[in-house]
Length: 183
Image 1 (spheres, helix red, strand yellow):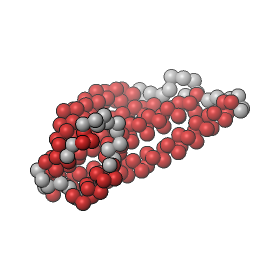
Image 2 (cartoon, one colour):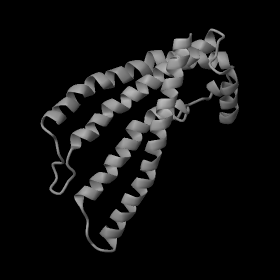
Image 3 (cartoon, one colour):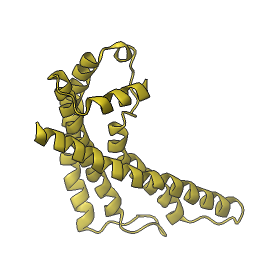
Image 4 (cartoon, helix red, strand yellow):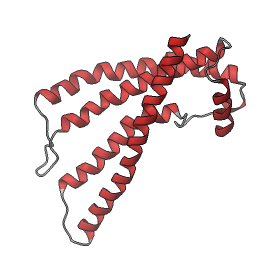
């Protein structure tokens, strides 16, 4: 049990730190978009690199921030029935969701993205547009990296729910506070 608890705590802490760093990318994205709008509409000048930077930053927020969002239970969920379930039934639904959908999907994306990313690194892929950003392979690597983080968090989530079902929840007081905070 100590190993399971350590894994959950490590993964939560890792994704907490990653989420904190990625949250600053939102501010960066706003600044880049404001710069793009100003230069395009006030100075009548537009750069492909700036436009590509916008979607690169957005991609990083989405891909690398997904695991943090999962940790915080922030993904969209249709919870017509779920919201009325007791903690044990919620744990069953979440455990099955992780084992049947989240973990296999994450493994599939990681597995299928490796060749895609590898090829991009081999050819040192850059933007096909004149004036575009170099090192597109770094952005493509974030697909694999993001889903590795999601997989780690999904396993932690599954283990946390398994502990709940076994009657040995991790940090029962912290879990109660989290449940009350999410209403």
